[in-house]
Image (tube, rainbow, N blue to C red; front, top):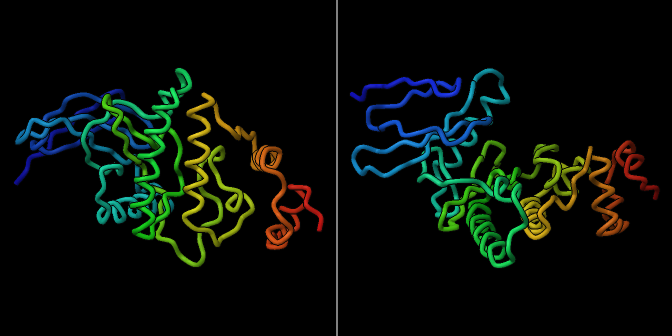
Length: 240
């Protein structure tokens, strides 16, 4: 029976089996990650720790959803609870400077490749953003953090995704959306890679929507007619 080893690093407690040899802490956040070596292969791996997963029903659902979905996904552009160690994330790279177009092209190719696989399993990530894109020194890329991911269903949760990368149909409180919301997020990430800053840095959801319409124009009347909430129509200045 495996023995457990306990360690506290930078205030975060990690508990792992003797199968792993502690190496170093590589990230802190909602899900701290520790880099370890598996004794059998001596290969560095990253283990994600989910903080206080049972403090609320929403956190418990998010934890269960992530573990359940990742159990069935196997792709080189998708990260898991335990995965090979990658050195950084796209958000950190973009905080330094815009990317050369060749790097942006290669990264978006891998992002779309990962999304194609995820979507083929009828799964929507729903929180695609630069900090959820892990990258190693060879420019290999993995999509991580499936806490908000869901199987595509006729009725979806209305308000998900990080604001800068949130698709308009989510902002308009639609509950019937599909994999296109991930493609929108990927497009926002591509623009940010080339510009070095977010394309739609909204201060709130109303400002966010106006930034989008300033560039892309108002949606067609057929789309606006689907907005049933008078509050949403008023906030977005739609009057039809």
